[in-house]
Image (tube, rainbow, N blue to C red; front, side, top):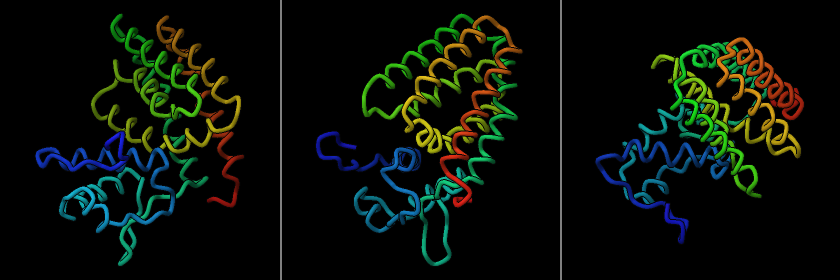
Length: 225
């Protein structure tokens, strides 16, 4: 995207699918494409100067990620936020993420520690910038605690789940004071992780994810099933 014009730039044919996937995914996660908003394929293909074939392929990938919904004869719309999905996504995280992070704590190297510290510093810097969306940095920090000890499939699954969770994290952090609480929890979690205290890592992360889900239940309410 051109920073001056705000227009999406034409894509290089060699990497068109991945670039298009990245552009649309970030537009959905950032809210630029709002929930329930139709994806106007003709207009988007014209703006990007591409055919609709790679666009349809990209939308199919985004559907697998749970970010768009396909409708018979009506194309695609951006998926809505719902209590049911929040429950499923955050319960999956609670089942997989704490154990994976605890296992990684036992095998993480000094370089892994540096990478996790860097991720947390970037997250906290983003939080300090007023109006800066920091949910992406939140996701990257969480994934940095998983990657050293997780296998390829586990990393892929947790990255996908965290991408879906990203929109809910943005909603959660919109409430004043929650980013301060989250930062303190992140610091405690990182310290336990670097100290190789796997049991504490697992406990802290379970509480961290569970508290977020509790807040989201109240925000979304029973009307958004």
